[in-house]
Length: 148
Image (cartoon, rainbow, N blue to C red; front, side, top):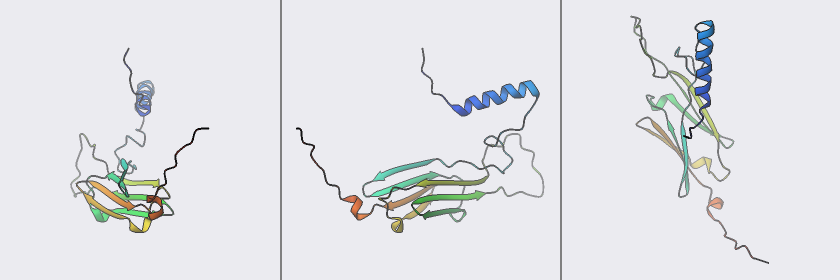
């Protein structure tokens, strides 16, 4: 017997396909539509690198000036919007998979992060936000557990 990872959105897509076969074509749900109005998710990696907390977000096809990065009350927010430049001549797409629309992603930062020292950079479609840890968070005291 083979173990298989459960993907909840795959189950929803299967259910939608079954429903479409029953009652005809339904409009696609928001996570599958390609009308340009949908919001898309930004995948993040959050890691510690020595005395720094590093957040990397995959945001391909954006210009740095189109991305907003804010830190307020211990929350990092990344947001922006991408639009397709349309020519006067309408194009009939046979397949359109490139996302367009707005994105918004917020994560709660640990109390050990110094928000004032945060910096960001954007290279090859990856936004990198680097935040130093507070001085008091860097010093740890190791306590030996005694046996009674």
